[in-house]
Length: 343
Image 1 (cartoon, rainbow, N blue to C red):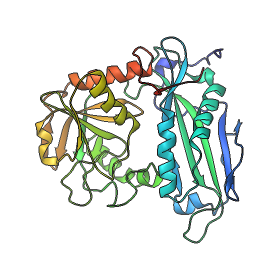
Image 2 (image 1 turned 180 degrees about the horizontal axis):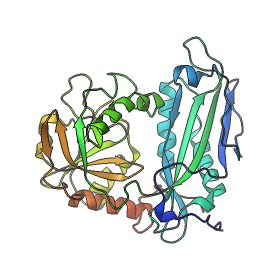
Image 3 (image 1 turned 60 degrees about the vertical axis):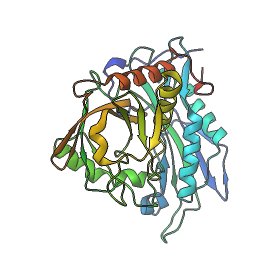
Image 4 (image 1 turned 180 degrees about the vertical axis):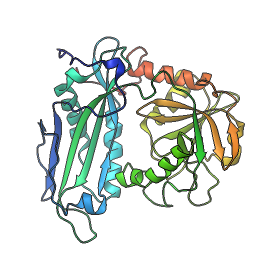
């Protein structure tokens, strides 16, 4: 049964927040999660001394629900978001929200807001934001004893209006993560420290930062919010390997698509700054845009231009994009377990 859609101009949606009717909330107290429920209240009320406000004890996820070509509403690989959130929780000494309950909560939020899931072909999707934070009063530096897990959703338009114009990046003087730090988890604190760097990059005329490894500053890591994917001149796909990189679900999916659907050679290895000019294409992988093409990387005045992709998405990147979005939208047969059907 499909809900009657809201009167929204789906084609003009940007990537921003629109309040929907229901969200999920569950509280952790005295060593256990409660049963959780849907609520219409979009506000979070906290004590002034809440752990999240004092010591940034918060983690989050991002995923999307879509309307497929045959009219079903589906989510893309929510089990991997649950798995990644579990790793984030353990690293920040937070209780794990059970994976099965995570997927069930995603399902219930999408079902309750089915009228906000954009129609097939609109270019828009329903973005879901699961998150967890320390909610009790903490004045000493220690983990909270109580937590709240929530999921809200909002309809969003395509990340790039009018097509994906290749981005220009700058090699950042800042480090995204400390050696042996929290770079591999989706914690709010990682994103907070990137804000100064991205504001500076935008002021200088760049779209994003390229962060290097904090130890030697010779290897490519990621941007503030996306993993890198490179294409060699003979059509192979390479992605940087590092303990400080967030394990992007989109990147992992694209690597599978490259190998199993397109028959390309795939490697995950250390990628050095001084070899960037040897690649034909470069893209940024993430939930929002799937792949954003990169045309130019500027290293302190030295321009590295990708031979393919300066004017538009390169041919291999385009095939990867078309195949993965085809899988998500039901136009192409998905690998088993990738598509979670909601209704």
